[in-house]
Image 1: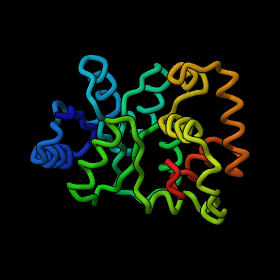
Image 2: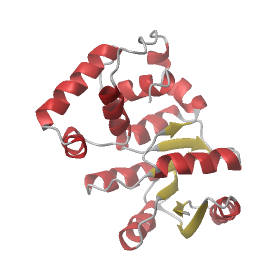
Image 3: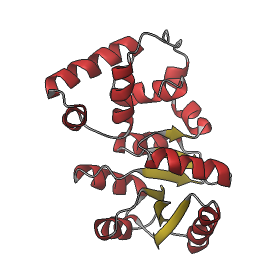
Length: 208
């Protein structure tokens, strides 16, 4: 059973998500809170397999929460939910290191599937959010399937999860300089100017 924490400023939304995922038989919400600060404190006491978090919350929003987690070195999987089709918020959350993004009108099946993917170390994003945010990269043609190596894709997935070069090096048991060179090589292969654009490109063309 996948353990889930829920952070949302609307009690009805929190309780609704908790009830729905509990019906799936796959995941269970073990705690709920109403903002990022409460979630941060709760995670320190009671870690979960996946945090399902609203992007916009008073006090501390979801983007700030993820930034704080990553600054502390936490790899806590975070699935962001929002009612706003706001591409800048999506980019902000992506660069902060969130592991997934869905709109709140998502079906139960899709939500549970996303929770499983994020809990397992994967990455998932709502196509509508990606297509809007990836306007600059969607015009670029897809790379040849064999241009990226398996190691390239693994590094891209870790970048999408918000890991720094140093953290990626630790995970893959490589020198930090080796990772830095590989990231530069990936950007060159994809024709992207930075890490965020590379992740958007990879998501848009389903490379990760």
